Image (cartoon, rainbow, N blue to C red):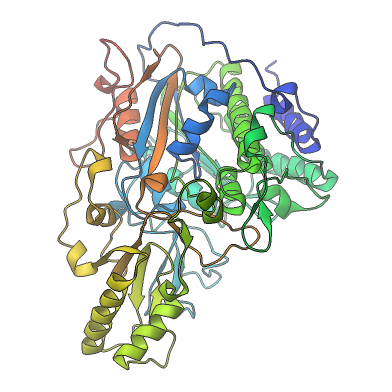
Length: 562
């Protein structure tokens, strides 16, 4: 009888929550031994495991890669591309996830941001969430009915099911938008956490696996737990930094009994994500027949920790250790089932540290966004300069960080022209602004291919510009200007800029028998889908992908030959 690794992992989750984990979590572990050499793969894998680590910048990867001893250490024995790029400017969760398995930039996925504005919509706030069905009367931008219809491109799982409906496509994450953008339109299983447990699309019943995982989570949350262990190598970052009224840098994630929010905002949520993924391996089951299946797993805790505490405190150090361990658990479960699988790991975007800490670490230009660059600030100044006002809603929507600005739908054509001219002039005069682009300008820009580190700023913006959804004006803030006008508990740092700390992410591929290689040249996340398609012999018409197939087999063999 096959051992129940889901139940075993549930025990690990409880152990971590209670702080009674194996020494690897609490002590500095010895470097992992290299995986023994095996024959090079000669047949297509039966299961594609696509992992996204939310807010996992190439900088964070480089900082901690020598400390990994479990799952990430295993992936470091495969094909390593340390300079992958989310090539576009809108470095947010939804756009980034939309590139990973579609192989196209956000200008083609249609996912320009986590949220966008439709000034003519009846909804009071005019805001639409990237993975919602805004036509459903039960949906709003804060509590959405989830649907994948905004995604304009098929995912790899969608394409596989078009070729053979027997191919299975599953996706799991804390975040619904990660599930939607990686799973696509034809998921056989799609699970994210809402409220007290995993849920799925409206009308779908929770499977026994989801019900079992929800019960396991409820038990852990009800019991509460002490602080998470701190590896000895976290010492250098274990210090407090004042961010204006409170400090970050030393939190250890104690879990108050019954505190589901505290559970969800801690590294523990990645463990629950792995446990749910492992349960799906057996329930569906995945990777057991002649047609390839896809399992997408997006880990959200790195993003949650990064937003709440930045990326240079003990909080992120703890998270990097837990992430490594839980990915190891997932890979061990795949091995124990004898599955022939390939893994790819990347990220939807990177992230900036809290500017208060960056200033202490040699970044004198680090700053928070000036109030004048918020939608409220810009609406007031542009209205005053043009003497144009509106009765219904603000003059402008959006703004705030590096992103889109929409105009009130009630403006007449001459008023719109005058408002845009004044808005552009004010933005260009602001010292925190790097570039200002109008929709008319962006429509004329051709998105380049290759060498993403060399793209101009307007080319980066064009890669996430959709004329049907993007704003009339797009503003880019200067390097180290962090969106958000002040730090608040739970939100001290963020992402969303066109700069390398937000665009550059690792890309790691591993399969049994693969020869280790490291390729430092820049590649793109849109290369992932065609690379995986090459491994399984999936041929698509020219123009399907924005990216290219990467040969991940070192030596004479070519992984792109199918």
